[in-house]
Image (cartoon, rainbow, N blue to C red; front, side, top):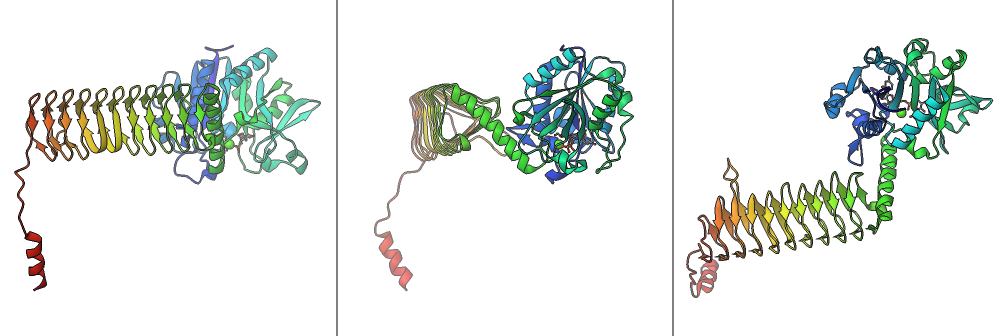
Length: 463
Ligand code: UD1
Ligand code: CA
């Protein structure tokens, strides 16, 4: 069953003491998204009628990060008295509802959509009151243990409350469950807080249901990575590594060469075409798309950008919010900022910065330049040290450089200004007025040579 009868509740009120952070735990990021965002995206897989996020520690920050979304609401847990108490806060939002509650943990970000769907199927097929997602792990430390009797789940015991014998159990509670909504909130009231942490443990619901002869089932996931919880920075790093590794594997299977996957950082939404080669230390972030047969050299960072096919991006370049067309060459040490467009076969060389600028097809800015708020046509040559002075202290102005123009080195173009088609701007020119098509612009005065000046200076210096 999916859709209208499924209600997702996400626990995200805890402080996350072990993170030692000002930031609420669920807002820490993995692969460019908060833990909570990963969980919200997985929740969408079962098309829930409602999603309730339980907030408490850093509630405003957590709310703000989620923003306004259809079907997503919040319930405040204050103070935070444990996971059962957290779920209780969803009661008023679900009062008039029926169906199934899927409980997710804001700190378990890798759960797959497939597992969530299987959880619902298993829960409904068995007609269970509760179904617990479990897994068998090598290092169960810190997790609640699944205690079985005659093969069936009897109860869940938290690490801190476990006897040495129970601690040996390697089947753990993922903190993810499906519950029949009808008996749930009444049963939660039966949970007490007599345990090592003095908290109301949701896990106690299992024993309560068993006593009341209500069917409790388990769904065991084969890959325990999916249900890893994050409680510390070290676990955050470990899970980040796994998420990254999964993405890297997916890309390699699709024909992308990663020279050193261990040092390649690619966010989940990034797309890369076949036969592209990615060198060590590269970061591809956000909604970046890269075409086929590109060469992305070491230590390049690309954020929310689109790169065509057969593009070479040389080392230490930063590209953010830009578009680069087929066959272009970028870097080394180039900086393409928001709204920059580099057209087919254009070249942006070292220490060149583009902002809100289009560099036309076949045009070149090979060394040391700042090109801001400009439309640059085809086959234009931008000399070394060219600066577009786009900002007068209050307003940004536009510059237009038409096809086939040649801008000599060390030129300043004071915007707004237009350099006409095929025009030449001499080296060292300060362009304050439009240059007509085909004209030569020079602004420096005539050169003056003073004969014997050095010798005379030396003589006076000695006296
Ligand atoms: C919990 C489970 C444990 C399971 C593990 C899986 C309990 C008692 N224990 O332990 O069996 O193996 O998850 O990762 O349920 N939270 C609230 N309000 C609270 C307390 C917690 O919203 O008052 C939220 C936290 O923000 C977190 C989640 O619930 O997102 C789990 O809480 P946490 O304290 O991390 O529980 P664990 O000790 O990991
Ligand atoms: Ca946890």
